[in-house]
Image (cartoon, rainbow, N blue to C red; front, side):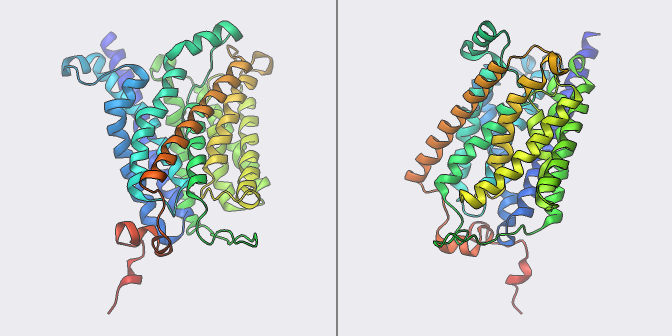
Length: 400
């Protein structure tokens, strides 16, 4: 029976890892559909190579920082429990690699390629696992202190804060340090439209992410005995709430509509195993409104050129999700209890602080030492030709 349980658990978490791995195709196509055609190849290459760099950084450094597990032992040790520890690494790697995939969308169309790969290694190897270890592995006694002080530890079941808010808040200083795309804003204060290059590709990316998200959330149980259908239904309700809210607030705009379900899913991650489905619906709907409102505010009022709106989508909706778990997870609002709003507030603020400090140090240092932005001519020609020497539509470069 133990052998059957171990094999089942290993298979369960491996399927989750594959579903979240597939989400990276969603990140790629969401970015591809949003950026201009001269930057589409770069979007695809960035996501794939960033994932490869993330794997190396997390395997050799990051996973050990977060969980104290080394992969330099014998194969006999690594394959215990049907290799569960190995597939657990695979599963959690796909979470870690989501951080640079999130950042990629914010810095699109003007970031240099190789400095970003170095930033990926530092973020996935050090910054992300620092907070991951605090939230999910009891590092530094912070969770024990929250339990003793507020009656419950910080709760983030599937990463509203650990993954999404951290990714979004690391992206914010990167976007600010890069500056806006050339021609995006004028000295007179007018805004030049940079419309999405392909709504169908944008929609495809959103759908791939949405489907994979059910592996992201449900398989965060990590074992079959802890799996609960409540997580799946809460994810569904939050997705629907975010979609309808973005549809209404965004006035039928397809870009908003297809980011709406992502906003809802970002927000429900933290409390998806605690909330009543009605609470998940409200959580997702509020997240949809937050994304539409804050995307317009950052782009049009504050003139922050966050290309895919990753700070509103992941940073702010993720932060809302951390707080929502402390609201709708309460028994008084139909939840299962075992959470404290003050613990959620503290954990959310700590995650944001680590992300902001880490992002500022990494991208600030790279800007001073290597430079992080394409020059004017490279940006005008587009990242595809400037970095990869090919465009997404090569017939334009064909001469007879």
